[in-house]
Length: 484
Image 1 (tube, rainbow, N blue to C red):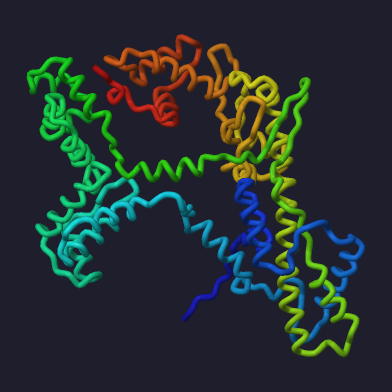
Image 2 (image 1 turned 120 degrees about the horizontal axis):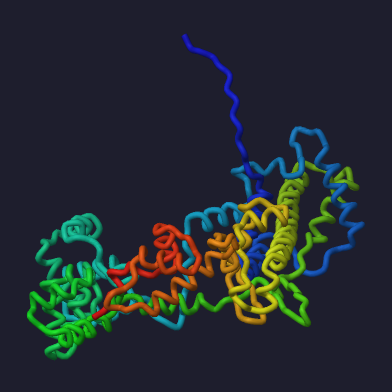
């Protein structure tokens, strides 16, 4: 016998309007401009320019409500016909792209790494079978320039994808051909092979030969910087080891990075979302977006409602279907306009609070004047949820009299000195960095030793916190900072 029971379940579901606002809030200024251009192309009911007369717009909106309240078999309730499956294409496409896809930026002026390697492949005299194997191998080289698939997996894929049965020996032979391509080190399976491939193409000096031997026979000791052990096993002096190490450190551990750096350089052209100017002790905030046009709902589309409501003879089933389509576009246009306005207001209010909390810095540019501040501090004063403030601060930049800063730069944890004074974790990181930069590289400071140094300066910090800050600054552990 089936048991029946009641169950309460609390579920929060965002409306399409809320989703629209959240997505726009996350966008930096330059992406917002592109997003608006895309929306103008997709929705004919959305136009750029000054708004129509507000009284006329209110009249049309009233007529929309009248049409919406018409209790007929096909209800035209504003937005009710927009189920989750019927959300306009641009909304669903945006959600999918933002959640699942990493944007790929085309560069018309430069080749991709894959194209560059295929171009070199065309200059080799290979059999048809070797050519197919090589094309597959090149297609599996990652952005760093490595081939991270084993021979058996490649052989299995070639059987199914190009109907070629190949042996591991044949694949290895073709891999060696591709490894001869430019840039040196390409198509390596691991870091050691990558470095050795590059050394093989350099002049065969004594330093080069010693570097090759170190990588072949003592790679683990080298990566762990166990230099004393290498000196003892190779019976060489420190001068020889230094010269050999220099041969290695000038190599590129990521031979495909040249193309990645080209992309990164293009993406690094930052367009600030805010401008904060200091004049005579006062701060002035501007939200950038000079290419963001004024938006309004299409007058022509609104007139369709006026004609539909005022002309009873025009209310045919075909016309009603047309009105359904028009209302959908009008709703979408209005949602978008409201979301853009709400975004701008949210950005302004959040930034005003941030400026008030960090006023001393914006006036002086002195990093030591930055006060400890977390997302909650801003959210409480701005009246927004912490998640909203997080979205505002993510991927946004502010231009000041002293340079351009990411908004995340202004957030830091607070801690107290042994005198009870509140200080920012950024100040502690700065002191850590100064001591690490000035340390004896033959005997780098451990996390415990750094904690002792900070304690002497009045900062009581646990070793694990030191490790956390060091990792945030992307500074390796003492063992990996060691030099000879």
